[in-house]
Figure 1: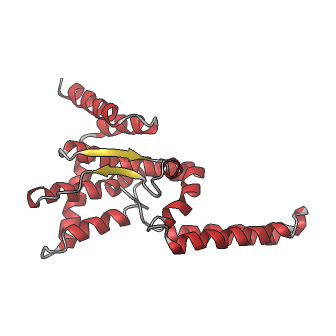
Figure 2 (figure 1 turned 90 degrees about the vertical axis):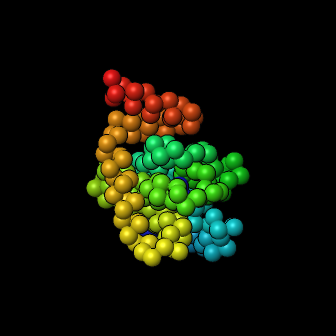
Figure 3 (figure 1 turned 90 degrees about the horizontal axis):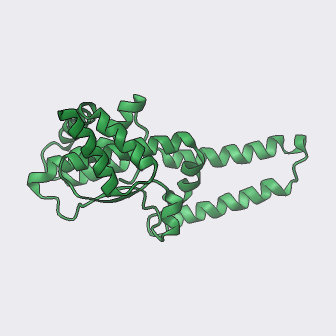
Length: 220
């Protein structure tokens, strides 16, 4: 599921850090004055892409480089999305596909299409609780692995939109997070097996098979 946390601040920090370092250490290492100028032009151009949105996908395009270049970011993304995948599968919600590389998605013409995609065309009232659990499972997975969560703002937005007609959406969010935490804690082996499959960009069917194998071994 699409991530949308503190990425705007991350982009700003990257831009400021890059420009500051090029200006400060440039003269000391013989860096051409053209370099900071070029960087400024590039970053302004990227900001233009961000501001225009390209159909709402500008931020995802700008974050692509950061996510691809940072092993820590890639690892968090993997574990976050594996949480969504596992919860959806265990709760009987169809998984359409997943993509952990924003750059690969862009090459396929799917700008910003990153994460696990589940069938949300018909969120029936009797299945709303399951979808809420799936939406919160990414946060639950990050907390399970890292003791904190940096992604999930977009997941919370989806949950809040789906429960806006209910008396207390925040209560549904808290219960959904608790259910997601319980699912991941009770199926640790299946979760780790799924992470390994997704790390290798396995097909959805192979991910299903890895989960099923772990679950069957657990019952023996």
